[in-house]
Length: 361
Image (cartoon, rainbow, N blue to C red):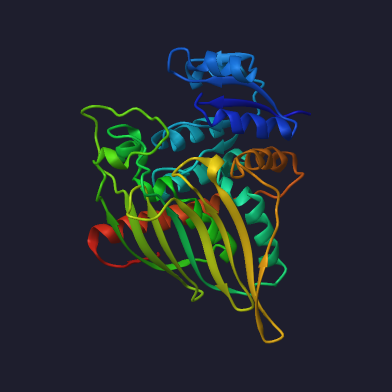
């Protein structure tokens, strides 16, 4: 039986969710968005039969829906996920999982009671380079990853001024929570160990400078709020003795946008990387995946060749959600991992605020 999906939010990410769900054999039967005309425009573009201006109406008038995907500002992730889980729907939610770890804990509890699948769009796990590297980790080639460095840095990447991205009450934070993908990918490759403590600092340099705005065309909101960081540097120590350092920014004095995880294992090191010629434009990107080993007394760098993937795993990630529901694939992510990630991000912000390490409880 084909899984029937309802989409909440009619923004540009619908393209990737739609392609991914359909590639896995699902049907998209409805789209809901309160913005006048948004649902209708998305339905026309992506051939979706039913449109609604509220989630309540979609759930009531499209009872055939088995699952929903949530593509809305961060503040609404948890309440909408909980509403849909309680209505008996599987949920695929955009990142971040919620505004904080407490929200994710509540989502997990509701999903358990409902007996439904809860997944998040950590699409960088689904990139061909990431999946190729994960196989080297899983088969023992890498050994234990002792240390890793996660980086998503931009020189000019502030997503508008005064809108929901720069309003902490709506977003949960700035660059750190927005560009959390490489932190998640590093943890994924490391086996998602339990944290011991976190030390970090954040910076708001350039956060109101229009010269550092990104190229996505998100409109500024005059008189709006800008109370989030545009860069963070931090360090996480795990109870296993493993360590992770991180650098995340919307606006920093760097050469160009860089998206990478580098790690050092007991048997091999490696790197998964995406370099941009211009900030934020995927068509200029160069993806690399490398493994570093010692063979016969020589330092050998292996280039791992994978297929091109301009969408950064977004389509494959959405497909995996459907395959997981159908029992034909293992999930790329679990709710417990999402909770641990959000605890680390909470701790990063707390450490930056207090100037002290934050211990895991």
